[in-house]
Picture 1 (cartoon, rainbow, N blue to C red):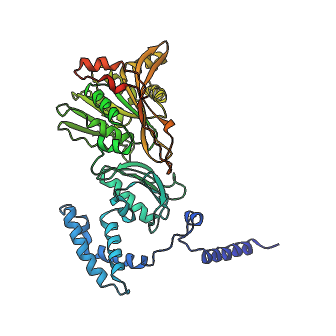
Picture 2: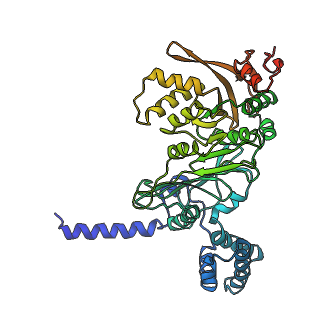
Picture 3: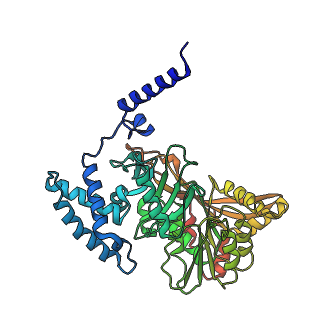
Amino acid sequence: MSSLADRLDAARRAQVLTTRSEPAFETRHQRKHGRRGLDPFAGVKDRVHQSLIDSLGPQLYDPHLSESELAAKVKASLQDVIDSEQTPLSQSDRTRIAQEVSDDILGHGPLEPYLRDADVTEIMVNGPDDIYIERDGKITPAETRFSDDAHLRRTIDKIVSRVGRRVDESSPMVDARLPDGSRVNAVLPPIALDGSLLTIRKFAADPFTDADLISFGTMTYAVRDFLDACVRGRRNIVISGGTGSGKTTTLNVLSSFLPGDERIITIEDAAELQLHQAHVLRLESRPPNIEGRGAIAIRDLVRNALRMRPDRIIVGEVRDGAALDMLQAMNTGHDGSLTTVHANSPRDSLSRLETMVLMAGIELPVRAIREQVASAIDLIVQQTRLKDGTRRIVAITEVVGMESDMVTLQDIFTFDYAAGRDATGRFLGNLVPTGIRPKLAAELSDNGVELPPELFARLR
């Protein structure tokens, strides 16, 4: 029988052989998906990057330099450093290296080309060498990678530090945003078992308009006119849908219907809404600091907003006990409020609101909660990401009132699934009226907003 020392020596030899046969840079993702090819200029880029840092030094962090001035200095120094590089390089290789090093210092490294690409709507980093992008509703692997997990971590730190957030082993999850409003979520080890994770949901620098949503098939002209009338007529609207269904985009569009002479307060976890009215006040929640103190929740902001004399309150998303404060605001004179909620159907959105009211820690009878919901909410806009990758409004439902212990609903517009699909799998259907004239039409008329009867005529 071998001794303990012999077994340890055999284990060390096996480890050396394994190390020689499998490069250290190969990760679980590479073994699963296949190696995507190593960058032949990785060493050159590292040397250029370090030389650039050595030459510019503190100027990279000078607060008195504007972004354009810093970019000009980096590009000028970058050209000198590359020209001094001894490795033979073609002009295209020099240009590529200069762009990638510049992106790394001034931007977000290998993600920068996809952040500049207007057709890319989502970037999903599953590890330093496993990046996916969403384009036209389809997810495909990206032709880029980070050098290692430390490179990915530096990029995450750069993003979150710009908005005063932090992420580390003691606080391994964070929501943040890019300067253009794009939403960022990062998860670090030990929560993420296989390395740092990063998800970026992009928002267009020029936000989508109602005309864009009509061209995408998200809504129709009739639906646009109806929603416009409901917003101007101060109806309380909830936009419901799953993750990535386009709720925030639709909320942005509905917000554009708000009159320009009203005082509007927006409340969000990470500021994404882009309102162009003159009188807009933007509030953003805050996580706790490193000592676990100083957190400002959405609920705190909703309560504070009521003291700021708002004409309208827009909550980016209700996901906790803030639902109770939001319903109370809607029921106490703050008509015309807008919010979003995660739910798969209009009926589910009401159930979610009930559950979130209970999360406020106040023991209320279910009937009392439902009466609050039925009194506060006028309209539910249900949005879905369909199998073809398109994001569509699939139902517009009116909250009619209470019948016994149930909140009664009626569909005003529904999606026509019976229209089928085209040769590419795209749904041909659209939102069609159910033929029911909403009861809120009378309330809109009292506010000076008239709805033409033909808007709800059922198509034959």
